[in-house]
Length: 279
Image (cartoon, rainbow, N blue to C red; front, side):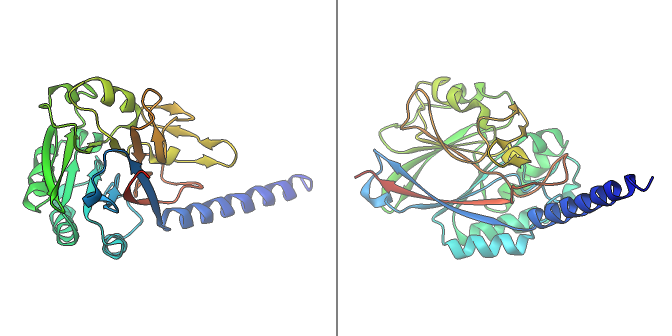
């Protein structure tokens, strides 16, 4: 029994350290500034700044809305993208100030959104869509629009969570001579987004869903992501297509948690993407 006591104390100590580390990780926001160079980027869009926010999972978030809004405002974005799972499927939408949050984002910059699997499975998808639209956020579920920014054009395409990735094929053709940006919750369909509709070839796809792999192991990487399983390929940051390296995928680790309550070596993630012309 005396021999077991030091081992038991060690295990208790390690458990306490693990819990404290998880507590800290879930409440520290990683504001991640990244740059993407595009061959077809007009000079007028050089240095265009985009906030990419995903998987807030209200009310299972540990980063406060006030902190998020403060960091987003400080970044001075030109556009804001919301790529799904703003609410958790267990949440009561009537108790979440989603419309107010959307209005606050729109007051900072034009904001665009698509749904995620939690909105779809919550039983509140229609109510969620209504609140998003009422807030002034532009809902891009299976739609495409052409914006005029700084006097030049930019195309935005959005895919809803339902029927992935086939929904890309039903979106009307667009002018691919201008930059095309796609909002789509699931990163695991990256290559299909580029091939399922030859009339839409997004230069950059913005996704979430993977939660950064939830647990990130040093020297190994992300442990598990929904839709990708163990050691997921797409978990955080910027990726290039294997077919066409000029096409990029941007994956947010998200803000909130879903089934697993802790992020380990994986802080909540706010991406600030700046577009640049290639030299």
